[in-house]
Structure formats: structure tokens, C-alpha cells
Length: 152
Image 1 (cartoon, rainbow, N blue to C red):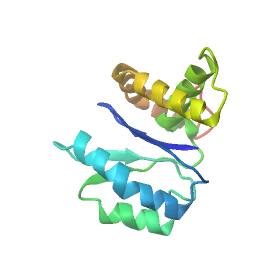
Image 2 (spheres, rainbow, N blue to C red):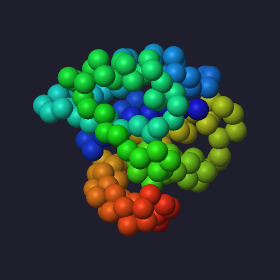
Image 3 (cartoon, rainbow, N blue to C red):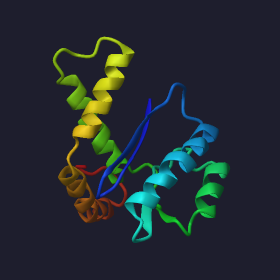
Image 4 (cartoon, one colour):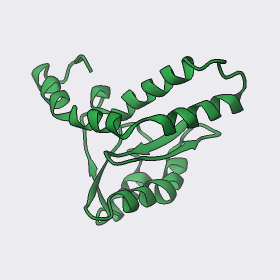
């Protein structure tokens, strides 16, 4: 399992998780990786952070930490159970396809981790920008189907 962050401008770290992500583990990632990424990438403006509504992301400890750092960045809230709105889903799909198309395919966990890191670093900023630019269309599509499934 991996944890990742990115923005219009740049890719953040891809963090390898040795165990299942829990609320406490998520809380340990936020200060070290999210906060530093946001302060570097959005040093000139208050950036927005988006995450899905997984229980561990909405845990009391994580929510409290995000609220305590609201002067550093804002959290973009999005509808529950709407994977079409989560750009990370598209990015993870692109990573999966990149790893599946590698020749030779990864044979060990270390090979898989290396392939994921390489593919992560190969994602172009224009790809990220295209995903961000798709958000108004995604919102419109979601509203048109009243929260139901969309083509995204």
C-alpha cells in the first residue's frame, strides 16, 4: 500500500506503507509529508488539500490536526462515496497501467516498489494539470446525475 500527494505544480512523495493505513499512521504521515509538501509547493498561496472520506482520513485525530493547520492550507471537502471526484484514483490507475506494462514485469515486492517509484516520477506535470482542469466537468457531471455514477 502507498500514500501519495500531488498538486498542479508537482508530484509529492510516494510513501511505502508496510502495514495497513490506520488513523494513527495517517496522522504520523501528515506532519512529515503533507505539511512539508504543501508549504513548499504552495509557499506563495494558501493551497487546498483534498482527500477522500475514508474513515481513517476523517478520524478525530486527523481532523483535529488538519483543523490546527488551517492557516497553512485548506481542506477541500467533497461528497462521500464519489470516487469520480478524487484525482488520486486516476493517478493510481495510471500507475497501475504503467507497472503492468513494464517489461520485464516486477517479480518481487522490491521490484514492484521500484516500478511504482519510477512510474510516479515519470508522471508529467501536464497530466496532473489536465486532471485538475477536469474538476469543473466532474462537478457538473456529478450534479447532473444527482450524485450518481458518472463517466469519470
